[in-house]
Length: 161
Image (tube, rainbow, N blue to C red; front, side, top):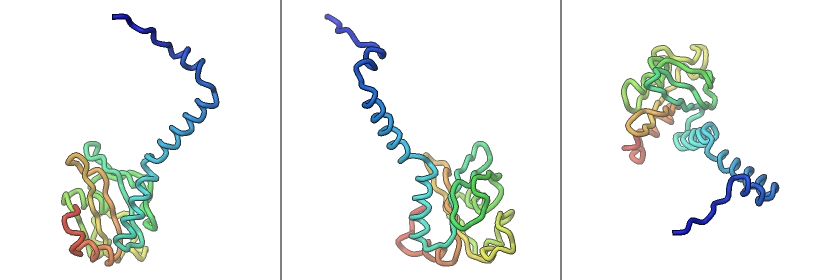
């Protein structure tokens, strides 16, 4: 069987005009930007907050094997976005400990919480929901307010853990 010659990379580049390479590079960058983590988490956070009717919320990325979580995005929380915390702290720690949805009548009941006691949200109800991937908790969504906790107990929310 006769093999056809294959062009080398340099031959391919010689035949592709620079303007076309630039357009392809821009297109690939635009597609990749749609899948960047933080903007994606911001969209998820925003939709979840609207669905639950909460005023402040956050999403953390959980690194169970490394023993910490990172507060990735938040809205009105002031929970030190971008910082990492041990899995034993905060509402995320409590959610992971129970391996399921976790809610409290007051944030004040969270052992080793990250909201200052002088913050008005200290006395707000809170809800933590783990998001699992391949059987492991990967993200944790947290929200404040009785509306969010009440919304989670509505019939349409059952089975969403």
